[in-house]
Amino acid sequence: MVAAHWGSEVGEAGLAGSRDLGFSGPSSFDVAADGTIAVLDQVNARVERWSRRRVEAVSVDVSGGLADFGLEPGGPMDVLEPPNRMIPAPVLRSFRGDGSVRWTQRLSDRTWAKLAVGPAGPAVQQQPSEQWLPVAEHGAALGRPAQAERGRPGRPLANGRELVVERVGAGELRLAELEGDAVGRSWRVTSATPLGEVQLAEPNGNRIVVVTKAYTDDRSEYVALVLDRSGIVFSFAVESLEWAESAPLSRFRLSGGSLYRLGSTRAGLFIDRFDVEVSR
Amino acid sequence: MKMFLVAFCAGLVLAGAAGAQAYHRFWANCNYDAPTFMTTMTRDAAQDYANAARYEGYQWGGGCWNYDDVDSFPYDAPGDPSAHGEGGDCSGLTFKTWRESTDEWRDGRYYWRALRNVHGPYTAGDFKNGFGAPNHVVAKSTAGVMDAFASSTHIGMIFFRSLYGGDQIVEAKCEACGTNIFYRTYRSDPSYGGVARWGWTG
Image (tube, rainbow over all chains, first blue to last red; front, side):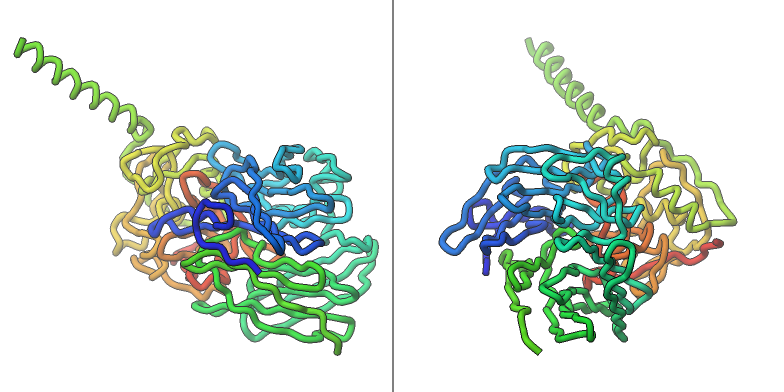
């Protein structure tokens, strides 16, 4: 879907670092409902949007650290930034579609794992609480106490439910869809090969799409699973091509029945698309 | 006139030396005291030690910081050991947290105070390969609290494992990042290996 050489021109992707210190590239991306792919190019302090006909860049005032990124319906963009040498706590920065600042809000907890745009606004999986905390509701930022009061164990979904993810031991993954405080559906996935992080767990119709990583000490690959009430509908493996570092859980996005993957090689950045709509 | 020129040039040299001294001023606060030999070394004490180093900055090749929660020299040139700014680098923070000796053959426990300026003999790549008597390689899937993941360019210690399968890592990652706790996925990254310290007592 997207292929961009390293660089700073429009249509290229920023690369920072060195052979001694390691390299980092664009740290996250998201896909709009109309199929536009937006990439957070924090190295060049901009968001680049690829649509069918063209690519455009919008400047955003970000620190340059490895940040997560999400698009809200209607155009606002959220950038979840890590602490840095001058700002010791993580912050969520919200921008309008033209790159101007809406608001900046410090997170309740000290560390974040993942940003997701929920039905009421952006929510962040935070530590040490290990909860999903909303950082804004209906366009207005929430202060730290308000975030903490609203924390939930699962990621909020558009249908009012929430999805709880728990990696257990070396090779077990548990997922549960909650309706209120009751478990509606749940899955337990086990693997003989150790499982790493869960990059993505999202509903797609009445199914759940999960992307996790299977690894040994010197190899790894992503595994995409499509789950329904009966178990795994189908699965496929995706080679992990990550020459440059990005934000930890920002490699995959699900949009319009397709799974998108952010990867990188020595030559540049790419985004692939996989169709996950299949009938049994 | 010749005497004036000589004096003028000497003045320039001295002014340059004063500038260099200013550039190195954080290390002027550091000391070279002997470490304290310890009989114990617990993982929660190691968490405390590394946690206290948060916010204190990053210095390539460094290993000296205070506890004021501020990076005193946040804009040192990345990768320049002569900047002599505040903070450890990734391997320096690990070396001090793991209470290691500057002698690679010693596997005892040596407590280094924060302002003791010591980096230790190991690079991230050395840790990754388990070099040194106190260090060894472990399977990544079994790495636990205050074990570490190391690549050829970086090492970070596991502060906690997290629900989504990644880890909270305490690390000195880069000049702009400082020292802090970040969520990372080093465990499943093939460029990283699992490493640990022998000799935990709890």
